[in-house]
Length: 298
Image 1 (cartoon, rainbow, N blue to C red):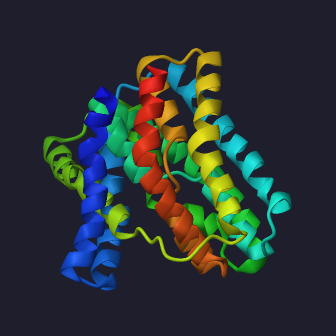
Image 2 (tube, rainbow, N blue to C red):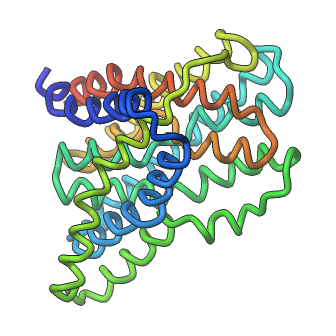
């Protein structure tokens, strides 16, 4: 109950984003601009600032990254079964496949901040930044036959990956951030989570149905919100994770699907409508499942 109440303000921001989109009629251009601001400026500033300042315990961080990778690979394996379990076109399967393992970094950082403050942001930033390349490799690879996007160009331009790498490099130098630079990045970071969650809420779309029917949609949702947290629990205990890193590994596994999955599906000629449905439903369901998993893991 305590965990659910702690996360309630963040989930209310998501719902507020959807309400503002409906009530204020600001138009797609406003929300698209807001999402770009968050994605290209505010969240990279948050990640760099947190990781550059963090006291990273590399002895525990390495098992955390391994747990994250193995958990995500479990989602890929289970998600791939939908190809044979449900009737759907190759393009629809390739588009929805990514919803079994991709993760919403905005919500992940908000949850980590709520649970462990700046240390939680740094740990979740490190984990999510490290998992973006393998997630994109799997998603783009499955969609590759339907479009011409370049995998390495996608990774090289990803601001979350670049901010994570830059923060790690700065952290390794041991040089503290100059005062004005730290304050500037801090101001940007303060706006990142609230605006990011509003953008997540504004993007919710529940019209239509997933390719392959609701059975296929239920499969992908069950893999992402139920099977992956179970895998993470077992792997984290097997690897001896505890405290901060255990919480971050479990929260990472229980996150809903990333909104960028829709953008990728659209860009590569896939089934964007089905992906939008899965993202929206997984986000709403995660408001219930994510606090339950975190409470169960403690």
